[in-house]
Amino acid sequence: MEIMRLEDVIDLPNRGVVLKISVDETDPYKITKLKNLIGSKIAVSNVDGTSFEYEIKDVSVSFSIANFPLIGLNIRERVDIERIKKGSTIQFI
Image 1 (cartoon, rainbow, N blue to C red):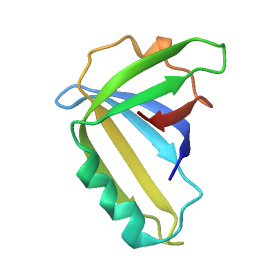
Image 2: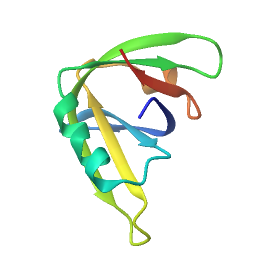
Image 3: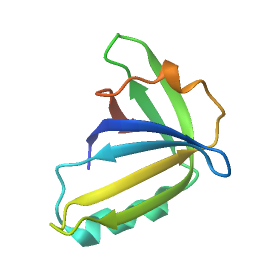
């Protein structure tokens, strides 16, 4: 899994900022290995040309009824969610 697309940014009161992403990967084994990435850093490249680095605090992985992966990356940093734009790309660094 190289590049992921940011679908939504959610600020949850008890959890912090969660980046909801989509991936082209459909192999459940590879997707569930995302849990091993807790503590890793990601680079978010905004559609407006800005970029940011964040640390992954937690990962949630589930699957829709159509077996489409639903992935949430909970980041450690507290940020204004307006800084992160939908449609941005995310890469592990």
